[in-house]
Length: 129
Image (cartoon, rainbow, N blue to C red; front, side, top):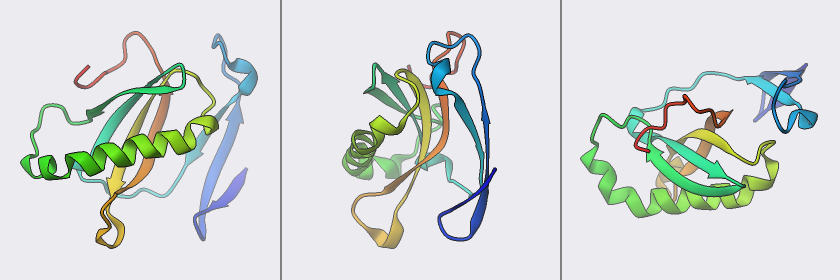
């Protein structure tokens, strides 16, 4: 199924059932979208448990970006606000979500966009956690 998202960019959405998953009745969605370059310092991994944001980690945990310390408060505020506003939309109660940030028009708060959303698995890569 092709859908239009954010203007004229077509997005392929394929619905398929999840097997052996507690929320299989909700189904799952595979979304392919236009690639956009993201600088590693603007990538974060968020952890949600029982529909509560429980932690956020820098995605590239082996690198240090000193210029990001200045923006720590606005980064935290933007990510927390994003999940408060969108939590009801997610098909799972527990999940890991990779996000990236952009600063449109040099605004004080960055825009948060989802890169990837996955169920929590025992052998997953948990960044700093």
